[in-house]
Structures are given as structure tokens and as C-alpha cells.
Length: 139
Image (cartoon, rainbow, N blue to C red; front, top):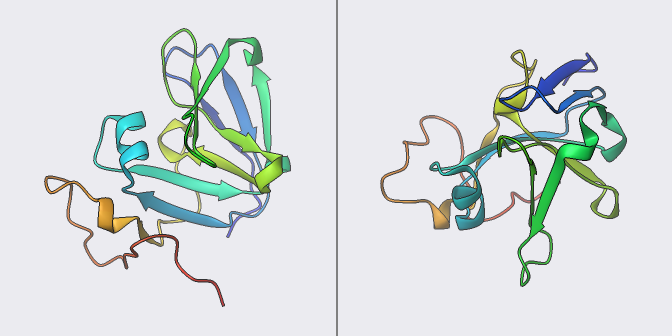
């Protein structure tokens, strides 16, 4: 876990943010919505408390889309370049940070793969990381 400060941005550099605080989780998510929103085999997301993320530039360029039938799923993106951006959800007590948008490597490694039952057949191998059908159970 880390309490360092990290910066992140979209690919065009119009939107920038900072995160700090304790990392809660870092998962590769294979659900079909994450696959569609990234165009890849999985999304790599770091989860923090919602107050851990702060927009530092371009907040007016942030767009979002909520899947109508989804209870929780929402994509957040730069309106200029379409890059994924953090989703801050105080109602769910979390901030979801697309790890690839960070400007440097975080002091945490992925702890596993989630929603493996939805994994695309062509997606990368899970390697030595554990995998779960949905969210892992918490002690």
C-alpha cells in the first residue's frame, strides 16, 4: 500500500489529476463492460477512497457514460481524446483509477483477476495471479 502522491492524465494532456492515500485494491477486470470500455482483454484498475482523487486541470473536459441497465458501471473519459479517466463515486465509497493513465508506476502490483467467468478466450493468460468469478470475498 502507498500514501505517495501520483499524477495522471489523458493522452492529449488536457485533463490531469492527482491521487494520494492508501491503495485499496488493484485488479485486472475481465467483465464485458470493462473489455468494451478499454477495447482490450481487461481493465487494470486501482481502487482508492473517493477523496483520494483530485482534478488538477481540464475538469470541464470530462465526459461520462452510464450503462442504463448497470447498477454501478460508468465510464469516464476525456471529451477531446477519449482516454479513460478516474471515476470518483462517493456514493459507492470509491475512486476507480485506470492504472494506464498514471504518469508513473504505482507502488502496488495487481493482486488478481476479477470476473474471470467473462474473460475473452483470446485474452492474456492470468499468469500466477489468482482469479475470481466475480469480486473476491473479503475476510
